[in-house]
Length: 458
Image 1 (cartoon, helix red, strand yellow):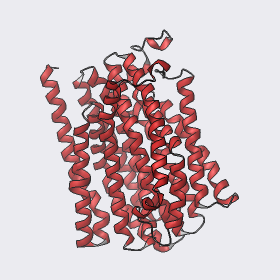
Image 2: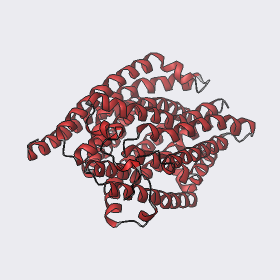
Image 3: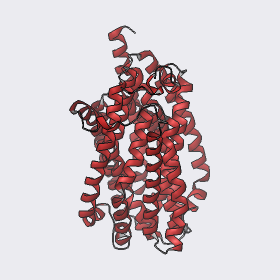
């Protein structure tokens, strides 16, 4: 073990936040920077959507939406290492096992490089059938293929930016974890108009700008680690993977990736059903869903911020604090999301109109946004519960919530409600599903923590 100044980690301010800070303050301190980071992440896609919208070509706009599941799959694969590694880092620090934490960090770097190379090669080899599965038709196929192909070529940068930020989060470095994403988004905003308009590359230019933005973001995150600003550092002696560490990363990480893949599958089913109502409807739904993602990333940011707190205290067997943090997190998330719902409800047509001049797209998009916004308080609670199970090293419980949500409830109900009620059923299925899942997941998590608490008498 090295002797640099960060070795005495018990008194580090990041550890104090995880272990002893007042629950509400700890949730805010860890969550707000990550909410900002999540906003920055969604801006990657919103910026592309905005600048493509200026072309006044609704088919290119629809193609960006059809390609979105590819980004979701990339993030899902990143989750295998990012979520698995960050939760193991937090638990190791809670149990005062610094060596294992640094082993996990180093192995996380290695696995990210290997996994991204495999994903890029497979994706480019099977690009044509992938675009077909995404639901692209005659007017959108070529645009979708161009956009997806470039995103796949830049998989290393997307995965590196996302995964390395998650690993930073595991040690409590919430502010540093968003730095790369912030710089990357700024670069994306600068480069989008240059590549789309100045170079005349249109949708291809949007994809190139996204890849280069992620490359800048990954570079910044690497600088944080290599300059010694992080609590932990990757070490050359840990490059050779330890079987137990890799196994623990994937034990939590694979179910986390499956969760995101199931969400992506549901998104594809939804898009394929929406195509029946016209390709402009797909464009309208795409804009509404991306605007909604701003609300989504609020609860995801807070849930991600709560995750290392829960993991640290699970490692330290402080179950009372886990319950207090969970209650504080739920109250904060629900309060914020109700405010977001009010904004969406009042300004829906204006917000949709920022991305398109088509009256049909604006009307449909506003209707979709006002329906989907109702999910926000419900899914926020569910996300926090799922993240908490991952933090505790109980990935199958987290996966169980997702399977119930996506495979048992949402996708079957999506098909049923679309058949019975048409487009209205299509857009109201998710709010109904999320209301049920909030009650189920919160009850399950509280009972699990109380059982652990009673078992050790704490």
